[in-house]
Length: 367
Image 1 (tube, rainbow, N blue to C red):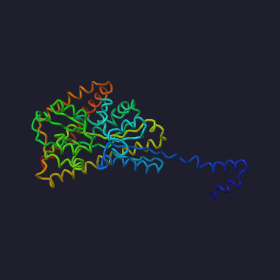
Image 2: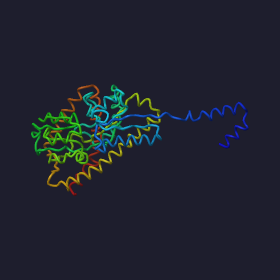
Image 3: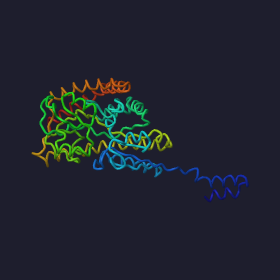
Image 4: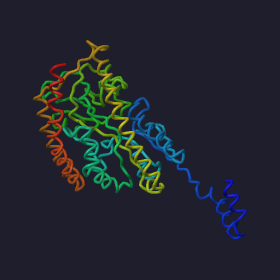
């Protein structure tokens, strides 16, 4: 400041006047407008990892932008119904949402692949397809007609196969069952096996299972399942989660609102999403491990943790391949996405087997 004053004192009147104007105007040039968004999630606040990831995103964005960008986050039911956030963000009623792609796959069959497909890739494979394959490009193309910009949220897979009131031995045991499943493709698989499948919002699963409205339900994994109280409603807890091997959440932003952001805030938002993805994945990994141990110790004799029989899994896999093929023919976009997904899974599958498959079998056999 002292040097500036000396400069002004020595300068010619014209130069001094110009410099003075520049100093006076500097705050107006530097000042940036503040951005305020609203985001609604598809989940109740009790789901600390899923809904909590949206809250974490809001916190990160505000901190990283120095308070210039703020996202106010609402749980399902606070400002709109559970599954309304996709459509309301598309219309611009709100600027952002967080949910699971399968919740709105009825809008376009291709959407389903961006969450997971039965017997698909694990979370690492899904993330690699998104960042290193065509996943992101195809997802943006799929969401463009809805005026949305999609971003991959935290993985909430691998999951479990769910809670059943009766034991499962063969594919025929699905006949007559009423099953809650999140994935549209997985619902079609169990329907082929003879079940009735429904998509029940998270907040309603416990009461539906307890009252016998449904006979079985899959949600996520031990941590979130126990948050919903599902371990108190059915005795038989099956794995693996063939229906959601690499399930991914998503963030979606209204395209007009996203493109109106200054470039630095757009980058801030994108990098904050990537950070939330890492935190969410590791959060689930640790919390599910702790919850599984709780089920084994605190609920011994009340809950049975069981593997689905291998013949049953093989039959489900055959049906899943039929469903994926049939659904991929329902739109040009679905056909394109399915081809890309299948090609990438065929690429990383052999590496997964070499890198981890035999190792996990060995650890499981010696533990």
